[in-house]
Image 1 (tube, chains in turn orange, red, cyan):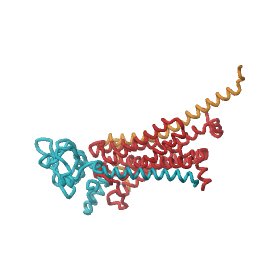
Image 2 (cartoon, one colour):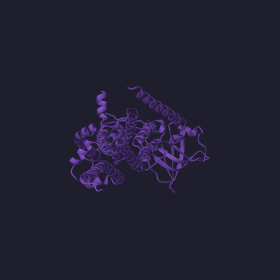
Image 3 (tube, rainbow over the protein chains, first blue to last red):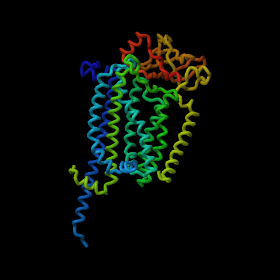
Image 4 (spheres, chains in turn purple, green, cyan):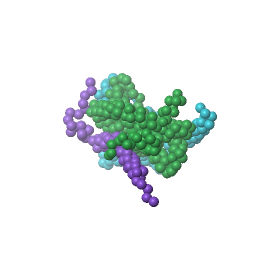
Length: 69
Length: 249
Length: 152
């Protein structure tokens, strides 16, 4: 039966002491990697929608405005 | 079959279908990632040689193995672009490149951190490490090439050619540990026997992490491809309608 | 498939196959330079000139590790089970260094046939298992074979 390898939170964070920094750095990089690749496309999409809305509004304004000559 | 093929090539069709897929993919990713991380960080027992450092493997191996899938995928998409001129294929090819660079970069970084602890050096110019570094630069090269060529069609063709040529590096990376002597260890063969090297308690969580990262890869690729579709089809009516339905942000 | 598409696909496959062959052949030709280290057998065959900076890789022979009392120097024999190389090294050894472990040493052969290392790296094999499983295997006397990586 699988058992937990650590009996307390501090023991878990320590990861056996010697390897703490190496192990947690890898998992931190993994979190950044996942986060960036999910959030960046969502922000790019919102940016695109914003731009297109602005363009549509400007086009609509140009279309209704009587031409000055 | 040909109808299906040309339908699949329609960006709008892909956009609408992927909208239905995404919630399921997110759900699958969260479940797999939660189980995989919990198992890898808390349940996997200490290794007899490397102790707790074995936990690095549960990030390094999934990321590195999926990084090897990116170039073949880009090469297939490139071939479709060159031969059938399918629009969607080039959008996928363009979206894979930065994701592949991220995967390869993290594979290199996590490997270097592990090596610093276990080998006593974070880098060695052995065949495995060097060929993976070359793959990283190839991804950067593909991205740079695309941004350097103004014409979208010409850029698509040039990147397709580079992707096909660059894919030759993938078997070299994979078999480098067998063809030459390297600092990097060869691939492990997994055992079903619980009392043997590489027993299930080691590889079952690894398999879960690989599936979790695979689902993540598919999500990241779909998100980027969808953005690319919107960008390139921004003048068509369905995108204009879609934008007008979106809430202002 | 339309003829012009078949022709294009043919050209792509032809170029890819040609490039693969060219790269494959050059890698084969460069094989010795791509190898990270020399094996003790290669050293014994005289492929190494003394004084030249190289790497030697093999297993640390059981019972061969000797720590010097006065200075921080260690000597050990590395082997590929055909030939041995005696290595002298003054410096910090990696955590994984021990008898029976694969290692890669950087340095040069001296005239008397010992290898003077300036750095020693540990190789990790492809076997992962818990302390308990390892103990059970040792008790049953079915310890896995030595890592093949160093013997190539």
